[in-house]
Figure (spheres, rainbow, N blue to C red):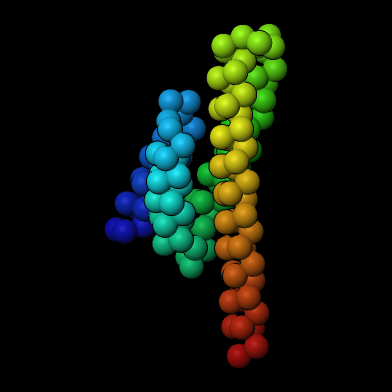
Amino acid sequence: MYRYVARANIDRYLSVLYSADITNYERQTVTKLLLGELDKLRHDPTQLEFAEKRAANGRERVNHARRLCASYALGTTEREESDRLLADVESLHILLDAFMAACTNSRGILARRFDRR
């Protein structure tokens, strides 16, 4: 059951992190919570696939934020807000990619250990 709670928490934390109206302190706190939930799932390959899908969705969000940012004229309030959102989304995506790379690497190490036996 904890896996389902972790999944729900991950979805909730990501939705908070993708919102535009969050302070830096809140972003840091929610990011730590997100990493804690992801860490709970990293030893289960099935659950790790769930996290990988969320990271892939993050790539789409980055692309969407870039298109949105480019659609606003320079110097407008909308452009400034979209620039901030883009920076936040890109930073979150980099963090998720690094986490997923570490999980994939540890999964490979575990697989090699079992192959040796």
